[in-house]
Structures are given as C-alpha cells and as structure tokens.
Image (cartoon, rainbow, N blue to C red; front, side):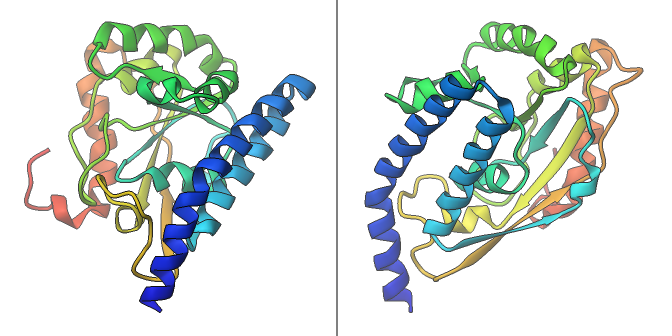
Length: 246
C-alpha cells in the first residue's frame, strides 16, 4: 500500500500545477461573470476539497457552531499548505492572509488578488499594518479573514510565538477572534517537503473551531493580554508545547 500511495502522490504532485491553473482561471472567470461572493466561495471550497481528495486527505470539523454570523478573524496554527486546503474545503466564506511572494505566481497571484486575499510582506511590519488598515472596513462590513498568527509555517505540530498584526487588525475593527486548531496537516506535507501523503493512502486533518474571543473592551495597549488569552485557549491542543515557554 505504501508503494501505491507513493505513486499516487507523485502523479498528483505532477498534475497539481495544472489543477492550480484551472481553479485560478475558474475563480477569476466566475468572479468577473457573476461578481457574487457566494459563487466565489463555492469555487474556492471546491478547490480545497479537490486538493484534499487528490492526496487522500479527509477533513473532520469540530465546533463549527462556534463560528459567528458576522465578520471575524480566524486565527489558525500553520504547519503545512494543507492547513489552507482543509480550511477552504471545510469552513469556507473567508479570505486568507498569505505571504506576498505567493501573489507573484502567474495566474494564481491574480486569482488571489481578485478574491481579496491579503498580501502579507512578513519582513515589512509597516506594510503589513497598512494592508490590515485597508482591510479594516471589509472586516467591519462582515467579511471574514483567516490569518496565521505565528507568521510562518512551523516545522512540527507545535504552536509558535504569535505576531501582533492579526490582533491589532481585530481590535481596530472591533471584530471577534476565532481560534482554529488544525491537527494532522504536518504529517501530510511537512515544511520543506514537496510530495504530500506519500507513505499512507489516507490521512485525516482535524479542525477544532474554538469559541470566539471578543475584542470589546480591548485597545491597542491591551494587545499583549488579548494575544496571550487566545494563545492559552489553543495551547492545550499541543502536547509538544507543554514543556516549552510561549
């Protein structure tokens, strides 16, 4: 079975650039033709589900009832590209913040901009805050965003230190933060690897949506307190952090 899984994953890895181009073009076409967020969301969700299906990834969601009706900021731990695919396929209806380098990929980058994803220049703090400031009105109007507060992928299923940006974004917009714990993605495509899920036929990603954390009553000077509160909500899901300092 391991050999079959390896062959499957190699074939799908070779095929995936064409899938990427197909969905990028489809997203832009649907957006231009219909200009309807529900249609955009449907295509994005299909994209996430197809990406997971290609590599034998199943998704289990716990706590979906915690997602608020209006605008919010999902804060998820980041260990793999499959974090993104799983969230697209299972939760949907939000826009990611992604490293700005991804926006330079032909066709795919255009699709991301068309959908309203947030380009994050990780080494340019002032530029990142300008992006958040420009998106603040969208968040207040009810849009949802998914951001990785660690700022980059972790090399193991361990919660890294949090950056300030997502918390400042939510505080300024008075939007709730929704912690999202993703487990199992690190084994599918660890950081630095290029062939997903090559040792087993199927794996499962579990997405735990925790209860929202209100930003009401917080201002920028309280940001470290809010940041620690959210991190402490997520920490019990990460045994590897038990003997580590935040």
